[in-house]
Picture 1 (tube, one colour):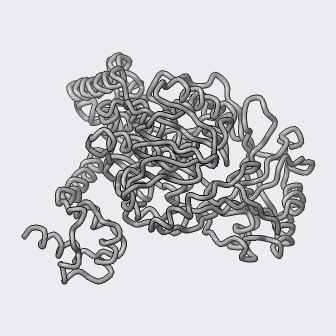
Picture 2 (cartoon, rainbow, N blue to C red):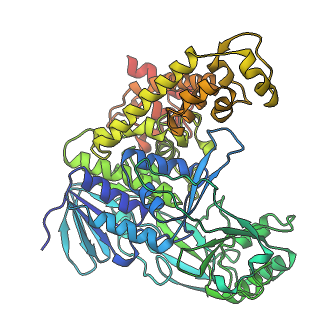
Amino acid sequence: MFPEYDVIVVGAGHAGCEAAAAAANMGSKVLLVTMNMNTIAQMSCNPAMGGVAKGQIVREIDALGGYSGIVSDKSMIQFRMLNLSKGPAMWSPRTQNDRMLFSEHWRLMLERIPNIDFWQEMVAGLIVKQNKVVGIRTSLGLEISGKSVVLTNGTFLNGKIHIGEKNFGGGRAAERAATGITEQLIELGFEAGRMKTGTPPRIDGRSLNYKLMEEQPGDSVPGKFSYTNTKVPEKQLSCWITYTNQNVHKQLEQGFDRSPMFQGRIKGLGPRYCPSIEDKINRFAERERHQIFVEPEGWNTVEIYVNGFSTSLPEDIQYKALRMIPGFENAKMFRPGYAIEYDFFPPTQLKTTLETQLIDNLYFAGQINGTTGYEEAACQGLIAGINAHNKVHDKEPFTLKRSEAYIGVLIDDLVNKGTQEPYRMFTSRAEYRILLRQDNADLRLTQLGYKLGLADESRFEKILTKKNDMERLLKELTEMRAEPEVVNNKLEQLGTSPIPEKVSVVSLLRRPQVGMKELSSLDSRIKKTLDQFSEDVQQQVEINLKYESYIQREQKLAEKIESLENYKILPDFDYDRVKALSSEAREKLKRIRPETIGQMSRISGVSPADVSILTVYLGK
């Protein structure tokens, strides 16, 4: 009934979709198995993509040839560039999306890839022979052969949903949990744990009074994620902001004695940076109010996502508290919020390719690794799909350095440090964030995507043209001279000092008060030159000039630290032979099995002294 597949992907969430698309587009024969074909790439929580650091990840996925950016653009109902008041390293794109369109576009894009087959059923276990995965076993007892398997089970592994004192098995509202895989993996020697996440109630938008809320429109000139020719929206839907108050908090507190979180019925750890509303008012009792974002779920639906009101309190408490929020006085609830507990596997059991250390050709991606967020899951799926394809076709593994991408930071953190709570990406996690900006993801990664066979030739040529244009513009601005009698009056209007003599136009652009727009207004000659180049090229040249010293400093630091990556460690190296290593370092190194001294240096519990000792030992 089934052929032998190169790659079998279990789960069709954000990680599974990217994994299947990547492996298939690179030439593998792929089977994508999901419990429900109608929920492919479903936005289980908020209908949005991107945000701080997450937006950088979506652009990186797109630059490599993944699909998340394209689908986000096609289903966008609003675009905002966050943190524009800060430096460009902090700028982060975010889209509000039509939930139904997002899922539809993903499915249609997957169905257009000839190398992908689909199967709707629960996967009950893996077929493992001699510590190597060779296929899957379904709940109907079907055995399907595969040279590699990528597990992207999301919140479905032994998922349990909590609403007040009620709990029941489920991987998502109205969908059953997946059983069998956790138990088998534990038998095979894997360590497992439990995590928790939550979602807010959904509301009928027709029952809300938006006059009592603050409107949050999209950017007047919207951007997009993808470097392809996706279109920006001609119109956008607004989101809205309102706030809780003391009456809301008192009402919520009345349900604490029935809270699964406070009564100990939930054992898993939840995301620190996205706490439930009951956790907020308990931990931050001194705050009189908390922000609530009122987010539409799409163009043609009245359903509203109440961002900031995630909860697992009893439904009657949720309903009464919601109606005390300004604008929600007559709110009608579509469904209550809930918490969900699920199994995960500490990611220190993985290689940097996301292949497991215990079982060959088995890959984990997404929430199974302890992460939270669509973007974090999608980028793991992309890397796992690439490496599953490479492994079965005897190609070199593909990894990204911490200085190359936020994706590299995320995977390096997971594999070397692990996580005790749902891992979410922040700009603060990246030590090279001036290098890893959202605006230059194509310059950093498209050539790599082209070499993999994911980014097509037209995208590669586009990058070469862009680099050439940047060099030409910089050269022309460097050679062009600004004349005092032409520019001084406007320089003073901009609040910056006049020039006593002719100077290079580049020196003016380095000033904080002068951007490309201001530069263009100084002199018609300058404007004529700038008009020959795209806004994207102009922005790159401006950022590179203004932050030149910072960029160079980070590049030098990256080169220095990455020299340690040249010291390879054999997979079966016997750490017990190195008696001078600390016992904690020896224990961690034997478990994580770092591939290089550089990776070793980033493992929690391994000291600089341990790094020096092993470097000297390997040198001998």
